[in-house]
Length: 419
Image (cartoon, rainbow, N blue to C red; front, side):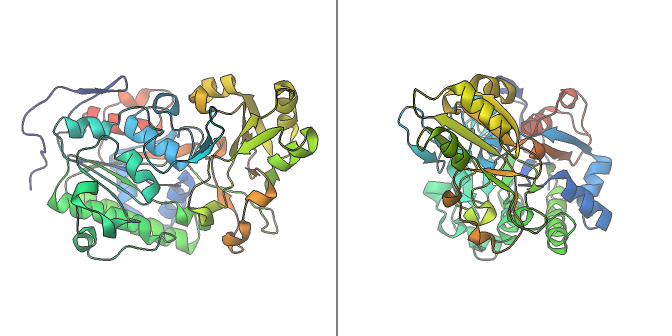
C-alpha cells in the first residue's frame, strides 16, 4: 500500500494567514481530549504506552499551550483553523450574546467565523475525514468540509447526505457506545483506522472525549487502561503509513477538597450579595450537554455587568479579592492576553486559582451527577500546558516558535519535512 496520497504537486493553501503544503502521505491529527501531560508521564512510567513512547523517542515531542479558555470547543476549532479564538470567534462552549442578552450553547457551526484547514483542503480536492466523539462538535468541525464528518455519539444515524458516509457501525464492526464511557473515544479511533484502511483520507482529524480524565486521576487503573487502549490504536494508524500528530485541547486538574467535596467559588452568589441581585451575570463557558463530566464547573468564567450604575472597577476589584480566584481582567486586557474575540467576551474574565472551580450560583450547578467522585475539570491557566507529539522526526522551523501552540499541529504535520 503506497504512502503517497497526492498524485501531483499542488501549490500550498493559505488558511487564516498561514500556508499549508499538500500532504505527501496521509496525516492524522488527534485531539486527545483532556490529556494532561501527567497522563503521558504516568502511563509511560507504567509501561503501557509503547507507541507514544516510541513517538516521543523517535519522532517529535514537546509541550505546547492550548488556547484560552481551555475548553473543548475553542480548542478543537483552533486546532482545525490553525488560529486562536480571536480569529475564528469560538471562545467557549456557552456564551452570552451581548446584543440580545441570550445565553447560547454551541451546538452547530454558527459561531465559527473562519475557514478551517480541513475545509480548505477538501474544497481543493483532498480526501478529508473528521470524526469526533461528541456530536456537539460535528457541525463546527465539518463547516465547509466536502468529505466525511460524523460523531461517535450519533454514528448509527450518519448518512451520505449529511455526513458523507453511511453504515458507520457496520464499518467499525460495533454499535454506538455510551456517551459517558471510555469507549466513545475508542470508537473514534477505531473509525479512523477503518477509514484509513478503506477510504484512506489525505487528512484526518480525530477528536476524543475527556470522560476518563474527568473521572480518573493519571495513575489510576482506569486511566492507565484507557491510555493503553488509545496507544494501541495510535500504533495501528502509524502502521498503516500515516503521520500521526497528537495534541490535547486542555489538561485536567483536581478541584476537590481533602474530604472529596468540590472546591468551588460560586461567584454569582458572592456578586449578588455585594452588588444586588441582577447587577451582574456570571457565564460559565464550560457549560455543555455533558453535565456528568463536570457539573458545568470549570476554572474560567465571564462576568457581565447588567446595570449602568454598577462600576466596572468595583466589580473587578471584588472579583480579584474573591476566594479561589487567581486572575480577573477587564475585557480588553483579557482579549489581548488570551487572543479572544472582544464581542463575545464578558466585561471581566475570571480565572480560578489552582485546585479551585468557579461557578455562577450554587442553584445553577447540579453536582449530584458527579456521584460522589472528586471534581476534576479545566478551563484556566493551570490546564493550558498540553502534549504535542508527532510520530516522525520533523525539521525545527515551525516548532521553534515561542511558544508552541496546540493549534500548530497541522502546520507541523503538513509543512515540516518529516523523515
